[in-house]
Image (cartoon, rainbow, N blue to C red; front, side):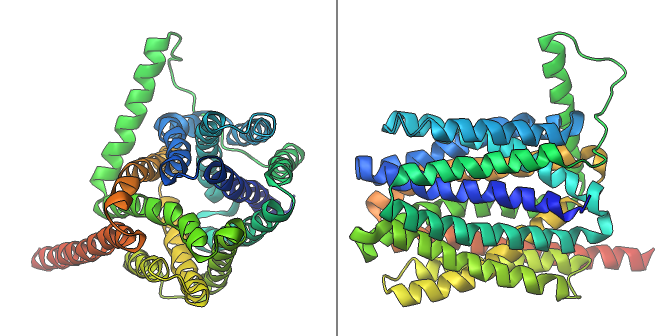
Length: 406
């Protein structure tokens, strides 16, 4: 089997995710005209991710990751199609919750399996290719969804969206690889209480592991704050598109994310060629990427000139791709026996950050302008990243001094 086929499976799945994000958000905004309802669609999607993240890592370490991905793709196709006969706000929220729930299972199992298939020495190169394919899916997904929804209606977008999930599942069924053997414990928990107890022990083990590795802890803190900040631009971009041209909201919405995706593609082409990203430089580049990414979001969400918006969306896409690619690479350096749970924690932090962000963002939006709301969110990420760089540098100097004195 050509192992890269596994990577294209994720691209199919991502294409569907990006298409339904445009279609569902536009559908909700048209139905209600309310930023609060729009925030609720994203919050419910995130809430599903929070719930599944509590145990998706445990399941990824204990069951066949390939089968988890197949069933989640099939289920996502079914629930997306249910919006066609029932396009009301309450149903939209239910679908968003279920999409968030199942997407976490897919993402965690997928990410945890990468080093097993491609090897630890290839994770940065592989993650760059994954990010590139994700960005290409984003370009086609967002721009395609924007054009299709604008000209043919959301129903056609949702049908195509469901088809991409089914295509992803079909490819996974067709291809085979040496999957990670499920963990077999000496005592298989039979009762519900025992199973919950075992999950609790698994989660305790992974949190203890993270707390014992300072740089991994710093990376996860910034990822949590980055997810919180992400709520501001996910809510802000459809509102910005409406402010630029309310008659072409879905088209501009898709175009902004599409240009952002082109920047991401460029970054993933360049990232594997940058040789200095190794060792501690890997972590520093991650933190600097967070700072530059936030600066980009602040800049383009503070403008309504379409050309300025698109130019800085492109630049922001470059640093956003660096941020997400390096985050996956750092997490994949952990041992296989715990890697699924490490990614589960990452998904949990991402979901919690988004959930909190989507609660706070509409409240700030009522009191502040869109630009100021984004300043507050991404300013928090910039400040936190600078502090972590300073703290980690101080810790590193102290470690070297102690080592030299021994």
